[in-house]
Image (cartoon, rainbow, N blue to C red; front, side):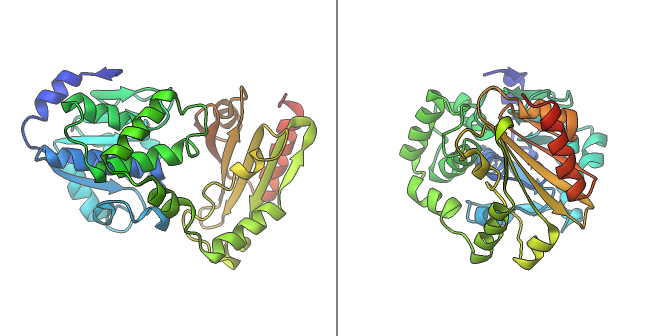
Length: 334
């Protein structure tokens, strides 16, 4: 385990303290699964814990154990402020730079409280005294599994912790189909099932519980799909009008970008989602093989992430953003 100051942290955690645990903005299954699993573990060590999410998370994740107790900062900033400023330790999970928590970034930057970072993205910032960073891991949830295991040879695992970790691993590996899911990842998943994670029920709650409106939005996404065959690229977009017409809710577009990669001979997929309230376009990139979408997103769309999965943003209109993307892949994409 590539951990900085682990023995020192173990010593600190021998005595109950107050701990704030924070996922990134727009938390996904891995961010929520890792924070909830860590909280459940730390509660077993008698610590007083609070999870503070910058904003709300999708309905399809609200069944997760203890998720109802999460403080939503943009709805209740006072509670978020109290949890963070009174903490003896602040844990940041599934992100490695304060910019990924916009509403909390100033508060975190000013904090003199020690930080624990557990994250699998590249180029971590240096704010954390205690750091577990490994870009080769399938998910932050897999790292939390390793972290908990290092404290007691599996004695702390139960069905709730196993469920949270399995959920994050499942969502962040595309149901274990991405290259990041190693044989070790699959062995861990098997152990989590033995600890009580119900793989069938988790799969159903995550992927087989769609609203009719979400399917109508997916039809818009597929109708807008374009393929640039000579560049082995597929892209699509969803406008604010289409979102409004189909009663868009947070999380409704989750996974839409992957449909492009299911097309024969397509190795690079992108989706552009307009957000008129924030006057920006949110972008997701996915790739197969050697094409590095992390570098692509960083270079062209103020983003980043992983080699085969990254995100970005554009302050142009959605039409201008798509046009820019077309020009880039025409001139630069191999």
